[in-house]
Image (cartoon, rainbow, N blue to C red; front, side):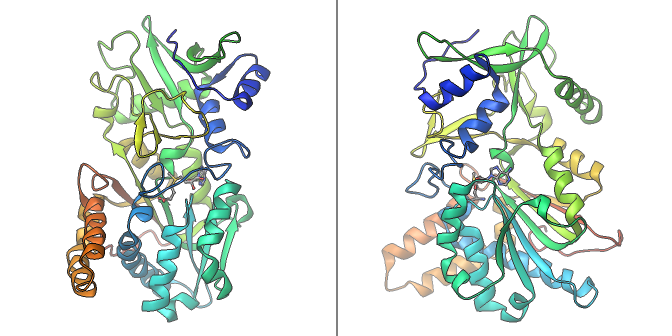
Length: 396
Ligand SMILES: C[S@@+](CC[C@H](N)C(=O)[O-])C[C@H]1O[C@@H](n2cnc3c(N)ncnc32)[C@H](O)[C@@H]1O
């Protein structure tokens, strides 16, 4: 049993005690991120961007939304050409954070393609009320202009109703995960317990659930991996993305014709479930820094983990999605015209060198492999006509 010092908060202690003193790590992550009153996203306490706790591509640079918009516009035009007259197009964004990407997209279409904009409705799927408030504030200008922007839950949408481009930038990494640990030759599910006297949180072990066991066995069989890997030491730990399949299925069922773009930190299965990755990829962030102890300041930090590339592809394709391609963010943005954008910035801001330099730096961080450039873009499609071919400039 590994014990860690913790800066616990009353609200969380009460919830864990109510559940008998131990909860699964999955439940812990769900609470500290999504609890409506005290969770990091649920309460809206999450601050994104260079002045916040961590940067995401859209919160760091408006040029990200500009370049991605070019790709979305290309997809929408192709989708429109393949639709029956009268079918509406949608852009659906999961987990829209502070609204930067949606705002950039609206701006791009408003300036560059008003005709297309008229045929598109904008839907945000965001379970956290605190974040919805931030998004509504960011999109105020467009809401006042009466654009068709709505916040919906996926369940509210009719099955096979969407002709859409569906976006999820850094959303899968925020979904709660299970943690599993190798102890005495057996895998256990990690739990989080509370020492009632000291109020300290610590990792505990609980019996692995049937659902988890089945999911691991399927991955071992289909992805040719071993969990834990051969000769794994005592305490080898990893994450298990138990919700990805359900999340993908829920989207698949709503799409009539469409593209799904997932952008996230990702690792190949062979590297993810390897001896060298002995403690998974779980990380807590606050004030642009990694917080070593994931039990520190629950509800005040972001918690995030990488997705597994092959698992995501396998789960998507099993449902019926077609994989159009996987590309590194750096390459995708270069294909979409990042170099030309740099040139435009230089010209646009030639009288304001300091502004030009900071725009340039932010743009370069999007493609820097040790910053955001190593993110993966997963492009999947679902078309009624399975032979439909779609061009994607982001994939060369
Ligand atoms: C790391 S932030 C990314 C925000 C934004 N996409 C960006 O890149 O700036 C994760 C976002 O996903 C939201 N989120 C968490 N769970 C979600 C779920 N099950 N469905 C949709 N969004 C979710 C969070 O509230 C938050 O807005």
